[in-house]
Image (cartoon, rainbow, N blue to C red; front, side):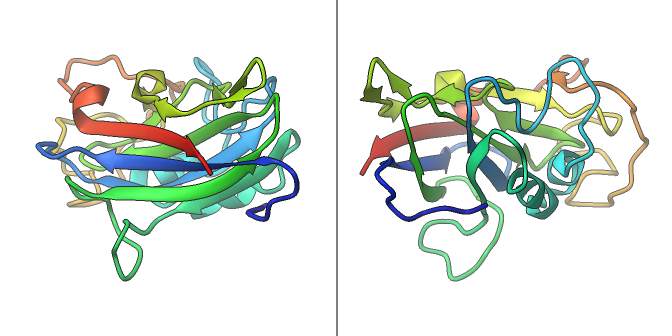
Length: 205
């Protein structure tokens, strides 16, 4: 369900920037505006819901997840983002570039989204499972919200050395099934700090 028209709700623009100096692309992603009790994309410490997160986290393809979010209870608006600002068509987000999308929300709504860390097997950037509250005391959220973002492991494919593993998108897909749980990444490898890899800002229209 993609709803962009102004139906009396507040308009927001979210910008996802891949920071200069980052060493990895960021993939297209999916987003949802939802109720405060809805966990639209995943549940921490539980297996992947089987609604498209695996394809996003392993292959950088948000198509299935965006479609699933469009029909989910508690989700009022949803969509995907895949074209860097100024680009002529869809593609991965390289360092120094940004994705940007506009949406509308009402008091009580939360925002969730997910986008893949490309040089990994199944890692993705996302707020917590309940998303980010878009209003506080009637005031719409505005400013830098990178501190609300974590790097998650989808638990669907065994992790390999970042940027080197054979079964990462830059090389081959189809790694070893992990059959694990979604959780904040915690393995023997070293990953970039979220704040050094991406910057997330939100503004009202």
